[in-house]
Image (cartoon, rainbow, N blue to C red; front, side):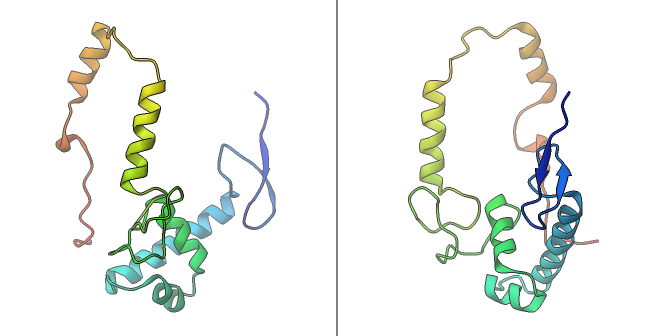
Length: 144
């Protein structure tokens, strides 16, 4: 397998990549900054992006990056973050619900339909379960 090298989008260093757009050092720094933002938001849950940036000394662009990734969510869609397709205000991610549903429908209509489900796949689904109890739920209000 050939090694894949990229230039870090943040510091400009060349690094061996496994798909990330940032080098391991920048990823570690970003995680540290995310923890700082998260701690600040625990103490100030209704803080604006501008306030978080000012008080933590973390660039608004990085906070926007975390919002786009869906790692953070705004309390209200105030226009700071907008849908990349239609421009509607959103609280997290890249697309509004309407555009996301439209994209999912479009992808579903072009992907081949699976009419035949073999017995192993059916048994795997049964063993994995389905529903809300199978998902990890995190309560951000309770901290250890």
